[in-house]
Image (cartoon, rainbow, N blue to C red):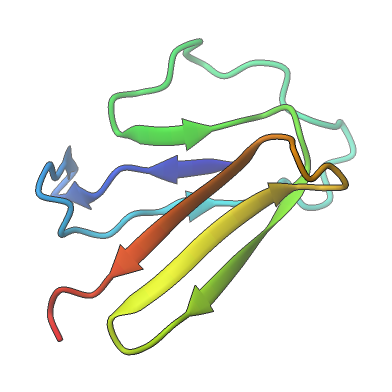
Length: 91
C-alpha cells in the first residue's frame, strides 16, 4: 500500500490542492510481499507506504466536494491503517 502527497508537475504541492495517488495491492503475486523497496526510506513525495500487510480500501463520497478514503489491514481492527479526507476545491 502506498499513498502520495499532493503532486503537481512531478513535485509535492504544499498547498494540498493537487491530486494524491493511492496504490493498493499486489493482486496475483505468487511470490508474496515485496521483501524490500529500492530505497529503505520513502521518497519525499510518499505520504504513507507499507509492504508488510494485505488489506482493502474504501472510498466514501460524502457530497460534491468531500470524500473519505480509508485503508484497513485485513482481519486486524487495531493494526496499520491509513485514512485521508479529500476535498474538491474547484466546486
